[in-house]
Length: 632
Image 1 (spheres, rainbow, N blue to C red):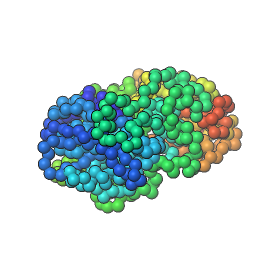
Image 2 (image 1 turned 120 degrees about the vertical axis):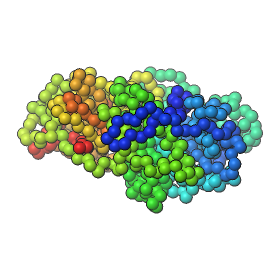
Image 3 (image 1 turned 90 degrees about the vertical axis):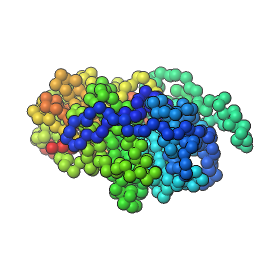
Image 4 (image 1 turned 45 degrees about the horizontal axis):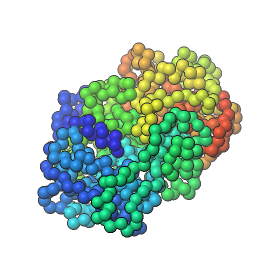
């Protein structure tokens, strides 16, 4: 939350560009499209809103002073403390200094910012990703029936604040009228929310749970009069104060389940989350979305190509259309996908750089679109916002916005790029190649996976704000150093004679064997520039025990060949002529993912490991390949 406020403080919230049409380049300089604030804002602090079970959630209300009639409500539900949304206290103009609470209230909305159950000032027990289906429904009903409300409620927020929106929409409150979930989606299914292919998103989870996952907060004694609480609340800090630590040391320690104890942390759900298999009833306490869940609310889905949840966001973009109860829900699903990292879509500039990769002028009228979205759905304005393209994507490499209509794109040609070599694909100095021609009889490639010396994470879709560490960097970084390792297999096309665009979901189909009963296989898609700089685009991983589904554990027989389908999520990238397409294959990306100790045991409570000799097969019988969504 604080990072979002800092970004809003640094970014001109009134400057954004017109949309580019399909096939065109970026339009001219941004045009300002959010009007000046119309009202001064009055804050009513810490209103206790009752849920159906009697638990009360602390909610700040921001009122536009002087606004006439009943007003629509924008609801924000956060686990990160609602109090930072109170700054600045006076936002009479929109000069890039106001928190979203003041921005929207200044434009004629009542903004309700609520601590989720068990967090900060709210009552009840906090459970990670739990309770937000019912609580979001109840909070919507409360907001819609207040005497100052016009009965229409919209929702807003990034990351976890976006997850709560998706979850509350499952119960389909009739007065939930519009949503803007940003950088959200990993909690879509049980195998999400910090799990990627069965591996833990270790760096992000350890930092997030330690800094943000506390189940304990010090509150006034029960029965404290409201006036006493309000008179004294500013004297106390609601957020736990934790010392700085060496996260690298914690990530490298074993067992995984003891990491937060070693780091020093209040009680959290970390130990439960990492120790319960996906079929365990413990997960029933969470609010994970099922593929059969139905929705019925117009939604503007916002995410970015270097965010760890972009693939799930696009799945939800489809699911909320297909599983809608009415034409309003079905026909009003829109998505905007920028080239940035987590929660930074709105911070693009004329010279956008993501990690170390220059991606041109990626500005877009994000906040202007948000404003028009709410004006239409909550105030009934006929402003044409629903005439915008269903899907707006930034094509990296070509460095332009493009309008589309569906996901995947209807004109996609899913193309197999086969892994080829003479058995020596180890490192970028080896003989690995990527080719549309199927292999015949070729020797396989082997590498040694030693959990004691894992392949280091180099950029990617990391939540660095979650990790709370400067030891890792997100976004696009040069992979050249990592590609010198013998435990990284490298498969590369020749320099492209003609440009190739890939836009869509990505998958690697590998035929593998191992000397171990369980191990991980990780894959990374890379754009190699003519000067040799190799920028990562997307990566995925699969713990082999989950190759038949995440709710059952099936170990391997050493030496036997198995097919693995590895999800690389999604991207949009233009490989210009002279560039090369590259796939890296290994068994680790640490500390983004926890190390598979290769024993077949629990992994989370183990301290010793087995060195595995892992094999990638590519032949007529075992045609390992990368499936790319080529756009003609």
